[in-house]
Amino acid sequence: MLIAPSVLTADFSNLKNELDSIETADLIHIDIMDGHFVPNISFGPHITKSIAKLTDLKLDVHLMVSDPINWIDQFSIPEVEYITVHLESNGFEEAMDMIRANGKKVGLSMKPSTHYDRILPYLDQIDLVLIMTVEPGFGGQSFMDDQLVKIIEMIQLKRRSNYQYLVEVDGGINFTTIQLCHLAGVDISVVGSYLFNLKDRDKGIAHLKICEL
Image 1: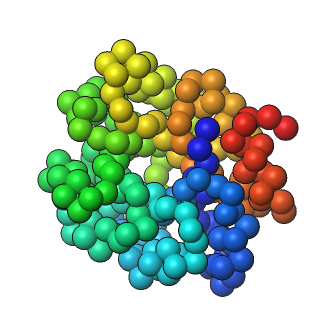
Image 2: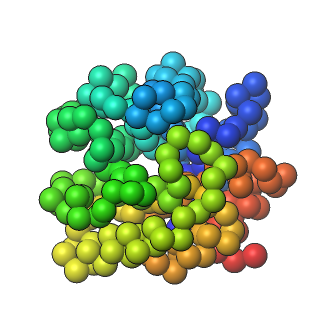
């Protein structure tokens, strides 16, 4: 299990120390919100570039925006490995092409209310499926158990058809819910407030990776 801390809940007044405290993670998850696709606003490319300078970890950018084609070039910096757009966003197919053309790995995400059959035509074109296990836009929400059906379906489809995408989950991940993800076969778990509320984050990351206390 790979762990991708979401810095949305980090203390940005102490960003260097916050990033140092999670250096044993595998990726840094960057939630970008435009105040339109979701009601919240997070931060933009300037802060993302600052984060990139303060960590050796690759960045996993999640664009929760209505028009991703207007954002992709700004986030296609060397430190970014994945850029993920939403099925529900405008022009997401063109956005996927832009991500690939910019040399980044392509992620595609779904809101909890979106049925997984909408993503089926794209599974052979992407590197990452990001399944939201909360409503996107705010941290600290509880894991939605009904999304396990979607998670399991994406993993089974991958195995049956030999697709190459990774399955990532985002929302309400803690030591209890990550067990469910681990059993299902999830590749990457995004962890936000649960991890940043721990005093010993290195120990927390180690436990989350192996799903053992």
